[in-house]
Image 1: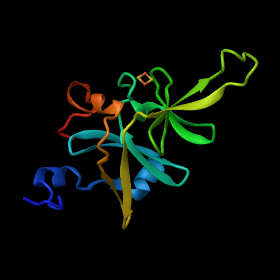
Image 2: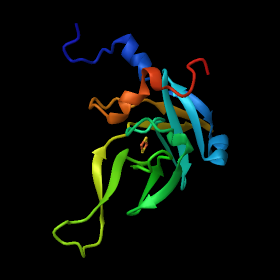
Image 3: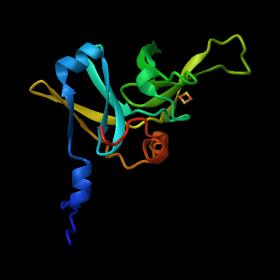
Image 4: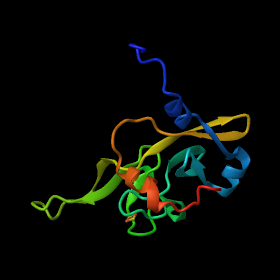
Amino acid sequence: MDPAGSEQDPETKEQYASVYVGREEDVKRSERITAVVHDREVVIFYHKGEFHAMDIRCYHSGGPLHLGEIEEFDGRACIVCPWHKYKITLETGEGLYQSINPKDPSAEPMWCSKGIKQRIHTVTVDNGNIYVTLSKEPFKCDSDFYATGLFKVIPSSF
Ligand code: FES
């Protein structure tokens, strides 16, 4: 027993070990790749000099985010899901939407956040290689539902 909790279950440790997903130059050239990291499907984007990794299936209904376009909304880079056009920030996984005050119909629509909906993973670059480490955030994220089981788009054998 480790009262300080510093010893990790070997399975948990394995799950959060970083995984090589590709060469930096290749990801920069293609601007996006897909990968399977410990049996979880992720998409890695290269946008404006930064790498971003997130669950590949959209939190709304499982749309394929690796096929979406990247656009800026309210100054934030978002992947736009190709199925129903939901906007998800690359940096934080927040769902963005526009809202107006119904009591003031003349008001300009404002961009608002639904909070974090898509799980974001960590990308590291080491010696020209790209690694992804799965998120350890304990909160339940909507995209978790589509990250397991029947909804996988990439066979595990890849
Ligand atoms: Fe992505 Fe509906 S599945 S917006």
